[in-house]
Amino acid sequence: MRTEPLRIVVAEDSPTARRLLVEILRADPGLSVVGEAKDGVEAMELTQRLRPNLVTMDIQMPRMDGLEATRRIMTEVPTPVVVVSTLVERDIQTSMAALRAGALAVLQKPLGPESPDFDADSRRLRDTLKAMAEVKVVRRWPDRGTAQTAPVPRPAPRAKSLRASVVALAASTGGPAALFRLLSELPADFPAPLLVVQHIAIGFGQGLASWLATAGPLPVRVAEEGELLLPGHVYLAPDDRHLGVQDGRAQVSKAAPVNGFRPSATWLFRSVARAHGPEALAVILTGMGQDGLEGTRELREAGGRVLAQDEESSVVFGMPGVVVSAGLADEVVSLAALPSRLLLAVRADTQPG
Image 1 (cartoon, rainbow, N blue to C red):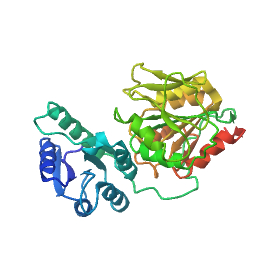
Image 2 (cartoon, helix red, strand yellow):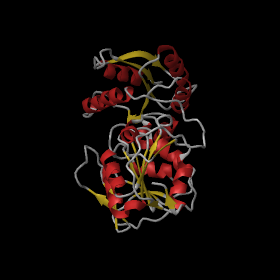
Image 3 (cartoon, rainbow, N blue to C red):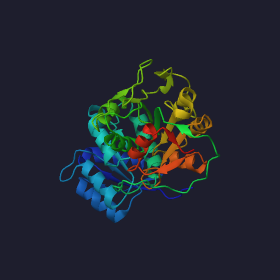
Image 4 (tube, rainbow, N blue to C red):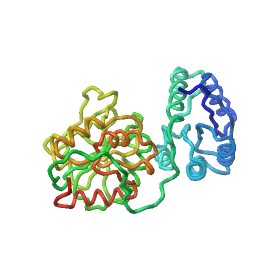
C-alpha cells in the first residue's frame, strides 16, 4: 500500500488554469504537485529532473505543444501522462491524437468553482490521476515485424481450429493507439468482420470510430442493432452498450454490466463463441483490469482461439496478462506482429490447436 503522496507535474500555459489545477490536486493529501510547467519544453525538463509519478498535460502550449511533449516523454523518460484540456469535448481528433502519442487518458479541464459540476469534476480528475499513476508504462513501441512469443502455460489439447470467420478485439488503457496501429496495417480485402470493445469515456465512441477510420483502408463504424456484419469492416461497441453477434448481424444490448463493464469484452467473447464456435478468434490488447478473462475461457471451450498482446508492447499488461497467466492464450504476440498473425488466422484453412 502506498504511503507517500503521488508526485505530479502540472503542465499548463495559462497561469489561471494552472493555479486552479494545482489547488484541485492539493485538496487531496494523497497528491503532491512537485513541479509546474508553462510549456512542453518545461514539462520535459521537469519530468526528466524530478521523475514524478504522473504528468498532467495541456495540449495548446507555446514552444512545444502537449502532443509533442507527450511523445518525447514516452520516448525519453516513460511516465504516465494524462491530458487535461478544454479541447477534449470540442476536438475529438486531437484527443485521439493525444492517446496515440502515449497519453493514458484525456480529461476535460474542470471549470471554475462557480460551475455546479466543479466538485464532481474535481473528484473525477483526482480519482483518474490516482488510477493512472499506478500504471507501468513502457517506451514507445519499437518497429519490429516478427512475432514475440513468451512462455505461457500450455492449454489443454483440443481439435484443430478452422479458419477464423470473425475477429473480436478488446482493449482498455492504451487501446486506441494500439487499434490505430493495427488497423493501419490490415489490407482492404481483410476477409472477416472485426468487432471491438474499447473501454473509453461516454461520448467518445463516434469520435474514436472516425479517428480509427483514418488509420487505413478498412471502414470503421459504431455498430447498430441488427446490421449485417461484413468482411473487412470494423464495428465498435456503442457508448454504454454491449456488442455481440446473432445470425451474422450485430447485437447491441442494454443488459446489465458484466463485472462493472458495459460494453464488456467478456460479453463480446461469449457471443462470438456461441455464434462461431471454432471459427471465433479473440484478441486481447493492452488494458487495465480483468475484463475478457471469463469470455476467453468460454471461447476456448467452444474451440476458438485467443491471441494476447505481449507485455513489452502493451501500455498496460493487465487484460492480456490475466489471460496469459490463466493459460488461455494460444499465442502471445507483439503489436508489430499482430497484423500478419491475424491475416494468417483468417486466411488459412486450418491452424494448429
